[in-house]
Length: 343
Image (cartoon, rainbow, N blue to C red; front, side, top):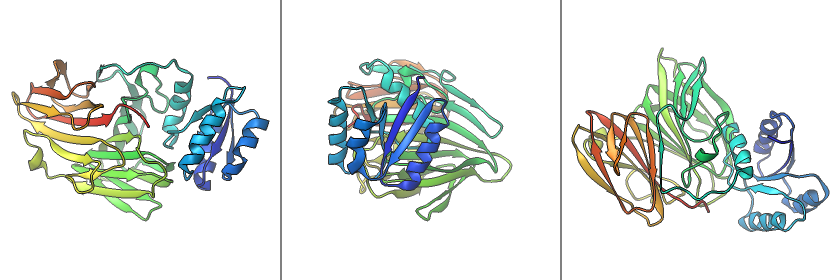
């Protein structure tokens, strides 16, 4: 990646300082930060700036104005307006700016083991989409689904305090227990069968560790671009009633606070089900223009005519209904319906 000069604009100084450190860990990358957005135009005009990164707390009108301003400049200045914080996304977001634009395919298959494999002394798993050191221009996102990591953390280890902003972050615990702590005052345990949601909004710092019980904390880490920026950060958590997902899909996430499951700032619906061999069911897309990404947690199934095994991912759009035929016992499937357009 070329030498790059960043201007990071936002209202949360702690996050600005962290992003500067994250950026400058990359060889040849330099960053300046601004917490007074009124200085932005002068700074961009009078300094060498390759990328403007819009962080938290900015008004929508300012963001639109600064994007238009950068587009009208004689020099090329790119803008990252959907960045969600955390060092894991930065390089793939930057490289994505310089990749050729492409239209989303109507269906994609991500076979188990074809993503970014993590093998560390404390963390193992797979990154389905570009994240951290794994970059693949064909795997930046599926619509507003930006991150899907299948992680296992050794007991007593985990992710230290780090920032996020303007991202909906969902954790689905599969096994073991995770300890979550954040600067909103939450300190919770997330056990197998629990779902956790953070709306990072204007900025949140959090840490996540596997409880020291001699095993692993296994969970799916999922990030969704929100449809509303700079909201007040919020935290929610629920324990699933697994009887509701036997041989059918249980809704665990939606955009409606009065609906089943936890709500987020996006027109997205998540469903989870565990099925016996031979069960056949259909899923009807809830909103026109949305796509569905299926992840086989364990077992196997045919989805929309594609045969999938454990840890395979499959995305499909431009359909109104999807047929699912389970082909092995105790098959567990996560369906994620998300908008295909990032706004």
